[in-house]
Image (cartoon, rainbow, N blue to C red; front, side):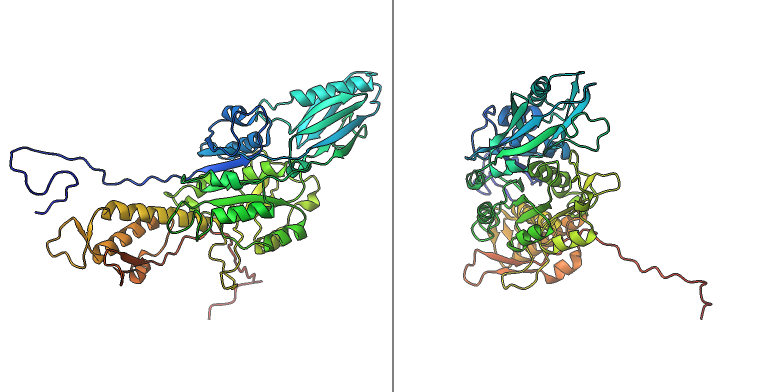
Amino acid sequence: MAQLFNFIPGSGLIAPGIFFELNSAGQYQSKSRGLVLGHKSSAGSLADNALTLCSTIEEAALLAGPGSQLYETFRLARQNAPVQELWVAAVPVTGTPGAWTLTLSAMAAAGGDGVFEISGRKIALAVGPSEAVNTTATNLAAAINAYVDPLTKAYLPVTATVATNVVTVTARHAGTTMNEIELTTDPNLPGNIFAGKIAVAATVPATGTASVSAALAALGDEPFDWIISPFGETTNLDAAQAALSDVSGRWAWNIQLYGHYFTVNTGNTGANTTYGLARNDRHITALARVAAPTPSWEMLAAYVARQLPWLADDTNGNAARNMSDLVLEGIRPPRDRSLWPNYAVRNTLLGSSMSTWKVNGAGQVAIDKCVTMQRTNAAGQPDSVFRSIQTIAIAMHSLRYMRAGLSYRNANKGYAQANPANLPSIATDDDIKVDCIALHRDLVNRGLLVNNAEFARRLRVGPDTSNPARCNIGMDLDGVDPLDIIAANASFYGQYPAAA
């Protein structure tokens, strides 16, 4: 009986002995990582554009600096994906940090409790009877600088200084994303002594546009499937498109590293629709956001990370599941309920390649549907095959599994059209075809693909006409679809008609 050995010679052995060689038969294990991009502070030890594994909020504080954009982005990602493998990279920016003044006026003589909000975080302060305005301002500045939520470990995106009756708050970073920071006194909070007593004015607009090109280049040959980036300017989308290109980037046939870029755009329905229609790329997803207490980088991180435990699961069918109504931890909706997107708005945005969210009956922000930015094919014709993010996940998982399986079964073999002695060192077209069908069946059982019989019927395997050492495979794959819509026609009768 012919045997295949990798180390023990097949001939030439004469001296007696019992010999064993040890080989791996191949055991596939998925590797699906998330990467979080953002600005670090000077307190962070992480070098710019260097990718580092980060597992805990405490590590994020050391790497990115407490309260930095990268720290908060990681914090929200970890809150929504407790055990997912996450890496971080600091994206530098030059420009001007935004600044605001909080001008305080005399409070009620009896004193009381005041609450001021920054990025949806509540800064509570007790004001004494007949307290001097400057004392209140000094105490408010101190409370801003000392703020940290003991449960979530959230910091504020600003620091504070004080002059006579005026608190000046400055963003921790330069960069235009800092212009989203919300500072407000909620007048609807009963008994809030600050209501009408703190005038907020934006005095220095934040400037500076970050570039993700160096961070994307630093990906190298490491697998990073899910890239969370609050930087969605045209130049950064172009950089993501180049990095993830099907021709020369991470999706190219000779690279096969894959990956997907998630970003966010803030604006009304018209602005978000315009933003979405300006791109056509299945490797980019953009979340349509409106102004809200929670800044865009935190909302995006929560939105993506909440999906990662399912998108990264290639074993139990989770990658194909509908993810509507999954609640985002740590995210606040817009204060104005009229900005909560209804069905018509969400349907319009999705048709414009913008991913959507909604607010449930409990006032919680939840996922609606996550889509890519592809609407048409290369010929400009409508093409919805890769619209759902689930399809991208299924494609990555399926191609990796197929590649690994074919490698386990056929690496270091000869290639012939027939193998009459059934030598294990020789692979034929029939062998490879059987392998493909078996691997496809595995993927069906993993809840990623469907219809193994039809796959087998369509499968084409044969030698290349110009290279006898090359086997060409044509395979048609059909992925499991998310169950997004259930439509029923309910017809009511005054009385059921008699049976015919």
